[in-house]
Image 1: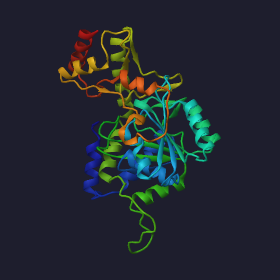
Image 2: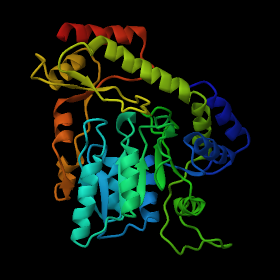
Image 3: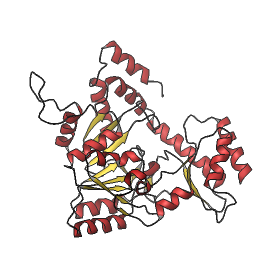
Image 4: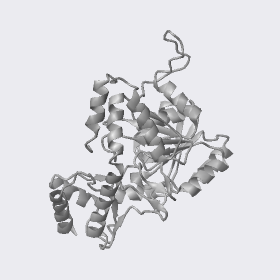
Length: 363
């Protein structure tokens, strides 16, 4: 926590704005939209809820297809299944580890040739690194497919001086406990389209019609953020730039320690982009190193230091084994050789010393 969060929480208690909605929610939406660079925002219970509503507002229904990045957390893809639609997974390119634009266009053409136009595209900014948005947005415009931009890991990142989350018809943000700023649990749907955000708020509050009694003409969801949690978000926003600076400093710590070692590569930062470096991730090429990804992970684990493999691609997940996928081997190689390193902004000098000892011992 940054320090000001309790002031907002106390204000919520003092004014008795505890339940969902209230002035903190309104202000959090306005401030976050202004920061990201969109016109409107809806504060929700999670980033997953934001993706789900984005799909509903994109008219995704049972039997439809939605294109989704394969190298991502399952929350990017699960809402497609909520709508009883089919995900179509796209592999990564090596320069950002995100959706490969060439494969994206190949997939769209192939789906069109079979008479199945995808209803939406979900691109992800993996670990805070923006995808190749110029190419991806151009392809989506060309084929008139709505773009949903999953910036859950990339708040504060930018592509050609434009904030992650502001490129698509919808942008998705997450304030889960592990994100760069947190509201304990929460997310946000951002867009320049006021009508769509208004509909999102309606659906997120159980789709209650404007009537003196409880009347419902649509299926609704309990997806709104509480005023208390929004207060935490307002306090967290004040330290967001500081958090980004800390995250990038952590990346520099690892880079200066390991980048001279043959076979070690960090997630690239594409020219004209700035990653918030939410997680520092590297790959170990066993052809050049005496160790592999698992050797390092287990060495950390022995010292009670947690590191995790990169996301297992969605096209390899048992739950999505029957989904169409357009792959080039990049995400599978990244999963096999990649590791996410401890990247908490709370890391102390002693923590870094313990980490450095493990790295120096191995390398």
